[in-house]
Image 1: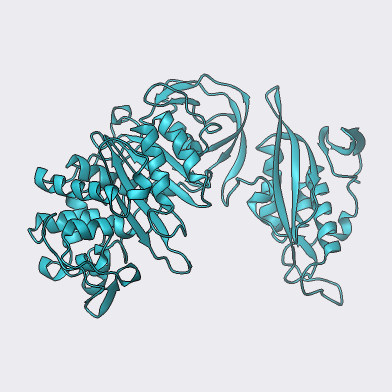
Image 2: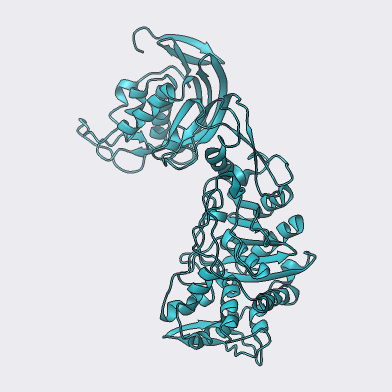
Length: 544
């Protein structure tokens, strides 16, 4: 123990007090002189250990690191990792920038090479103090050149939400907090609606000052991205939050949160066709990447809404026109088939749409005489790729101009088509409304941001034909089972998309009920109506 350090008992564990700042430790700090040398320095030992770390090494390395960290000795703790430079910077910042004045770190039983632990800390800033508790974990690895058992350094060692380049800070918040409310002035919090966590953080970052609040004292994660939102972890003193109204609907949001939890990876978005107002956004997992608005995946046969509109606009088909639906179809050497090889003798476009016949749509691609026709339809009518400014970070879909077999794959939502639940909900909303209304989460008057507009609308005849085909899909087609519990004027489209490396295809489903459109995707969910369908139905029932 360094000269001048004192040992005291804090809450049943020893605390090492250095320079007047106390850090509770798992136990008395010891043995550091023999456990360092973390970064890529060569071992002076005649024999460098190799192979997997042992249980005893995992226990020893993790305890020594946690003791050193808890004692506030960033230099010593960093030498017990495999990246001493980065570790020391982060550990020093924990004390000096995050202003953690005490910390009791308690490890749990190791699970393989991973050691979980809980941190019970105190954050103090300008005479204000508050307890702070959380859990994280570390991984013990073998040093590449030293052969020693070391903590594998990662920002998550400090806090589970910390990412590369981000840092912990405590002080006056960079922006005032907000009280986000739905369209009916119901308060929206990340505790009640977990999927809104990153969205609320972004809304605060962008609109906190405009909402008229005052900043408080907080501990937060400062994003590595200059344009990214900071994440508040602890509030020492509350400021006065500014009220920010969103387009969300608390009832629809609550239903969406419950619906996605039935699957390990699922997302859903609901949009009002007449205005573009976003009524619900939910993901499972609820934290982290907002797949519902930022995902990029092939949407499968839900894309046939756009394809059908394009074919009808070009006069190549109509809802009641007979078209061929064979078991397979080939275009530029690429063969496409229907599920289980089914065919529809004497079927119409509506029949092929409702039963999701792939080949019927592929057979018509030659007649368009323009491989880029679908990309143009998606952009010019449905607003895909027009730089949507929703109020938060979102991806507005992509249908690149392709040729040959790749262009044919796009007709059925495969190949290079990239969508997310927000994009597909908007596509359904456009088909229903006839005119693209860019989805928004907060009113554009709040910041004067530009709103995307499509160059043209669907004619009333085309809009009616497409939505009628969706009504048939919900009535007797592939969407019947999922939409059975939804009332009002309703329509749907199912989709399945094969993704490399997945044994089961992704399940896609989009539908409308009255003036609400919703779309969902479930990873490895199989056919569209099986998994994503019930998610959409739950949101439509709650919000329409």
